[in-house]
Every structure is written in C-alpha cells, then in structure tokens.
Length: 74
Image 1 (cartoon, rainbow, N blue to C red):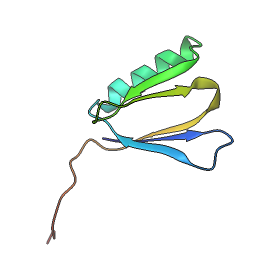
Image 2: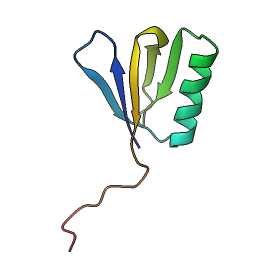
Image 3: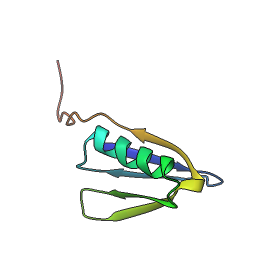
C-alpha cells in the first residue's frame, strides 16, 4: 500500500510503500494523535522506520491495497 505524508512548512512529502493494512496505519496515527504522542512511527516494505513529529503532520494519504497491474489491460 502506498503512503504519503505531508509535513507542515515543508515543500516535499514523504512517500513509501508499506505492508501494513490501511486500518493498521489509520489506527497507529489516530492513537498517536489522541494520546498527544510526540511522534508517529511507521514502517515500510524494506524495514525502514519513519518517525514523523505529530505537531508537523499536515496530512496522511493512505493508498489502496490493490496490487498494481503490469502490462496492457483491454
């Protein structure tokens, strides 16, 4: 699944693919925001860890869980 994170006062966004489900990502971010945690911790497919400060979190876009098709579709 594709995840895009917008950071306040930054022209670029963080974009990566994760093996977590959309509900897992949504729950992780919701718990961090509701508990006034300082960071949101997310993992990508390669094992990289992303720590995003909750104060500067502008938006989080969670892509679809469908695998991408390769080739021509008729």
